[in-house]
Length: 296
Image (cartoon, rainbow, N blue to C red; front, side, top):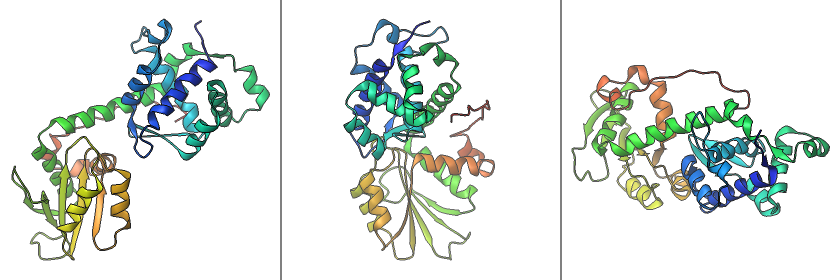
């Protein structure tokens, strides 16, 4: 049975936190966080090796260890994105010793006494990783998000507009205009709540397929074209900076909704059966069901 010390796992998770805290206001995609963490550490032959079932051992070790960090309230994982919480930042600054850092996360997660944790503090049972339903669940979810995101980044921008058009139609809005390829003046779609477009509000939609997060300046430029009776929807596949989200949330002159990939995907699933086939063919999904672990 091969083991890895608690101190060694502490080194890994502290390096992970270092990576995540390099941009404290932004989440990092799980696979990027793992790759950057591995690049900062000289992996042992054991850690760099692969399981017979496939997959580098280090990746699974890190996945497994982050379960404790999430349950301790030090990390957030959502839609394949990882970030450090305020409690995690405090722990990272306070607990410099890798062993103490990971040991406290385990203590918080399991609510054990110091004596109970001490009995299990010597080794990290890495052979349990392959059998961990939690790790399998996380890796499957992250892989799915990665595939969906990469797909949307690769298809033509006009096809992303067609996806949004299909979603709006499934939600019973009436799309009256779709910008042709080329410069659009800041508006990609115009929709109304009635089929003739005689009732307010008018809905202006801007769609961004760019991988970088949408900035405050881009949000302000979009709000500048909104009329008093307009409602603005800004869909950005790459998401929004925290400042951009704050700008949209705090302003009171315009009605604007920011639509990131997670929110869009939730609406896509909710209205999937009503989405027109033309749009559905651009992002066709098939569910795969399996038993979710109790730790999720």
